[in-house]
Image 1 (spheres, helix red, strand yellow):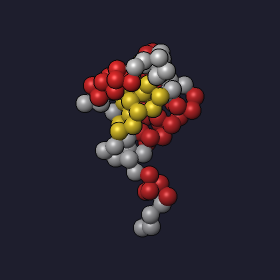
Image 2 (tube, rainbow, N blue to C red):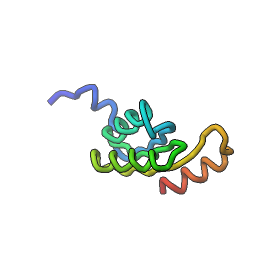
Image 3 (cartoon, rainbow, N blue to C red):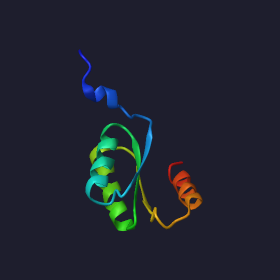
Image 4 (tube, one colour):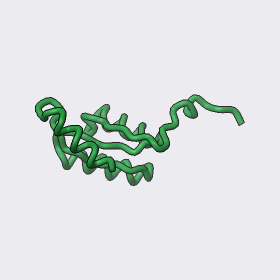
Length: 89
């Protein structure tokens, strides 16, 4: 069996934080990373959007998906790092 280009993008046992993942391209990228094997943290300003996307990813891929409401522009970096570390444990 020959390797495919997708074999180069295996993300099993990796974690990814996707900002702006509540809608649009961020949502699509989060789904693609989960399909490649990553556990994902779904971040957007609206928690309900994050929860919806996380639920879809869990249902469609079986990967871990954690919703995190955050405004990445106004929140201090230390606060964002702390919340992300807690969510991905």
